Image (tube, rainbow over all chains, first blue to last red; front, side, top):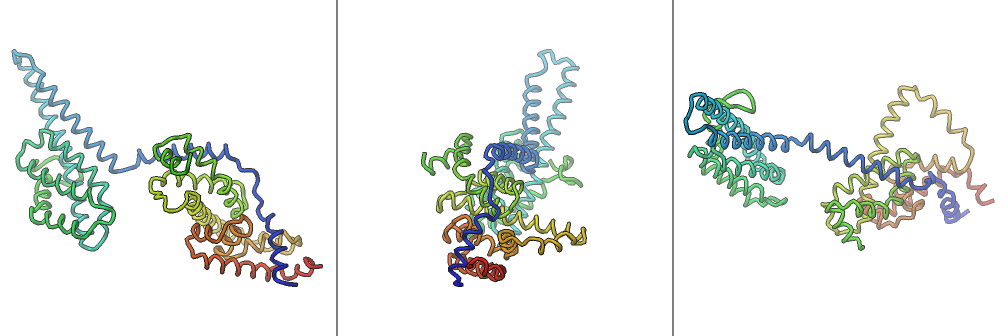
Length: 212
Length: 179
């Protein structure tokens, strides 16, 4: 018996190997649609940067709203009750900004420390671009907020805006010269040191007491 | 609608275009999944997973290969990884059950097709994938190479070894085939 003959017989016989039934198109399509919807839901709930970003944005929006309300709030007579209410609202307003700023600065410090350490160890920089983009948006919100009235913080925010924009624009290849320039900029302008000084002291990731 | 236009529409989230893409490829993906898994529920699960991943990753599809090639690379990866998990689970279950069931089955299947099926099931994973794709589902070596990320020559060599192993496993039937 030749091998060819066996192969031909094999080829005939194997057509019955796990012979598939008719494709259950509709049932599978329904399950695909449901699975994708569930994944989208999960992604929205779990994506941590989104959660942080929304939290910070919400605090900033709250701050703006309170600020605007208190600016146009009390009447011309300036009654004591209205003045008390305005002072109370100012305190809430200031606290809201401090919370937002502390969260933002802590996250930015973590990103830049990680970026410097990883890229110096030869690790790819591309892993930081998405987070840098998101923090860049928050930086711009911070620069437009009353938090930027503090000249020290404003100067720091402007430097952070530049650095984050540079990281956000790194290509997936993350050219070495670009990464070196970013790290040099961080060192020359003592960005990390100023950032650490600006972050209020305290145990948690959201610290509201201190330098701010 | 050509493939590029279809992909562009799917990328914008066009549900109708997603369905067109699905309809165009689902039969071949499901058939392969079923041939490899031998189980309808698993085949459905693998097919669904393939399309969920494909829709999620379509943004990164650069069009360097045909969409079907790219899709089948995802499908084979999903199927092989899924089968590894199933195998691991079954091994654990068999150990718990003291392995009594599987041991007694071998002699109870005198039929050629059952013996052949068992012999194919027992092929090493890579050989089995190449054999099923080529000899059962009619994929070319080029398609297999792209899907499994191996050279065309490797696909040919693995097919040849798979056939040799099957001939060997079914040697005692050879006389009946030619008589």
